[in-house]
Length: 386
Image 1 (cartoon, helix red, strand yellow):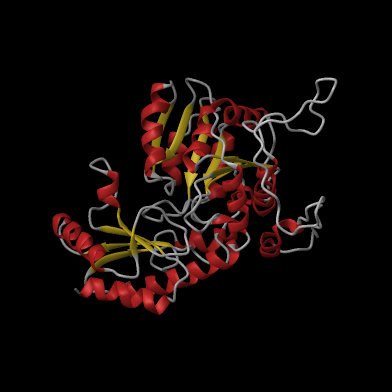
Image 2: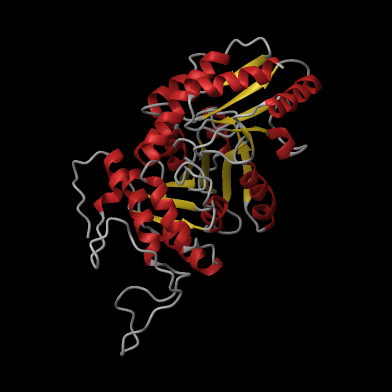
């Protein structure tokens, strides 16, 4: 039973999980349905709506419905991971279709696009999504079927003008999909800016506790393309488990608190270290001298996110050595891959991504958690000085 009030703010919708009450027990927390299969009716139909958990499970519904409301979409699907969600969108295309994607983006998806996607017969073109003239030149009317945007883009944190790219994509007859993992619906609602599809690595901010791997895709309209994405989830088996879906919905209840706290701390940290003598650059869209600050101000509401990067000063070799040494000295920040959890993480990205990475060798990616900001500043400052 849902007690949703249309006047509720998104933060209230998240905290109350749409006001859902279990119709059987009156519980405020949804049950976990572990069943993999369901009984047919005597006439061989499935009138209760469930047949086999690879095509859907009642435990998916609370998280899917909540994210649909937060993004302002019409339907959401959960996947086994963010990569599974993203690749399902791409696999819904046909061999020969053309994709325009960012030159700097989530590394695993970039590698998948340039590898398996090309081998399967898709044409993939990587461009600077913040350069609208480059996007316009790359998009081929009648040929380009998908434009993929990640904003802010990991790990340089450039911000793409979603509305402007949406116009270019739609004029060419292409769909616009936005990876909004780092912005979350707290800061940006891509569908309101003209996007057709929003994808999240729900492992990150949506769950927020580093204990779930999941992905989501939300659509503006349930058209034939969306139906292909849904079929791919069923046919490929890229589904999340019921317990993980339950944990995801639980994590989303505190999404607004966590993202706002992380964003406020990230802004303080960026300002504090902006002119540090050991750093060549602080990359954060909330800084006035960031190249996309004006776009971020217009497109992001309530903050600029909890992600930033710092570049150590010196030659490439010197900067890389200094960055790795700095990461070795922190105590409060944890040296780990991933982002968006309650704990703050630090990572030398070039070491992770390898020789083909566009990431500067002296870059450290910072995922700001919800710890005391003064403690985070002191710990990073001490590491830089030592």
